[in-house]
Length: 303
Image: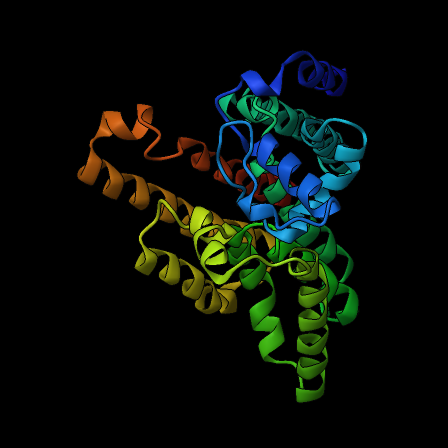
């Protein structure tokens, strides 16, 4: 019933009237690639260029073909509820996970605003949870398939590198040289293949330098803070024993990254300007919601 309500909301709300353009950025990215254009020089309905990495093209494509990329959010919600339904936990805990989502203003904003931010992170964490459950003793057992999913998710948003590094690096470190080489080879192959969809018709160097997704995804946070947030997971990975640890450390690192970034922007540009002047996108704070959701789904399984 909630899934149907979310679908109705997406059809009812005209995306062009919204002051958020994540749905529009995905729509423009997909449309540009299908038409053989460089997607990062095209403007969305707010006159902004897209920051979608190529992996989001494949995630959003089915819903673009359905005529509404905003449907991504309701369908990810449906997948999450199926995931919760089959979890071997108490029914009261299943209801708690459902209530946690539908009572969250930040999550409801994602649905109303047709945003793909949380859905992107939900998919990555769902992958980590399912892969860990199925290959707990040897997560590199199907290394080619693992390389494919790692490449796909890495090429969605830079922030997902944090949980993926926590999940993979310590296990990768103890692999023998042959297994390491095999994984790296296939990872590079899949990264190149997925990225190739935006490399076919490249514009001038000046255009690429000005209009590329990395400029947009790192616009708010200081570069040293971003670099530290990407390096720390390599160290914390060796403290990961269970998938619940991946979610716990991801929460710590991402929360610090977002909160410190907000405080620095607040000190430099003012509190009001950051909240109301589009100098800081406070919806980034919602990235911790998928992490909390999966952290407690794992904790409930351990009870």
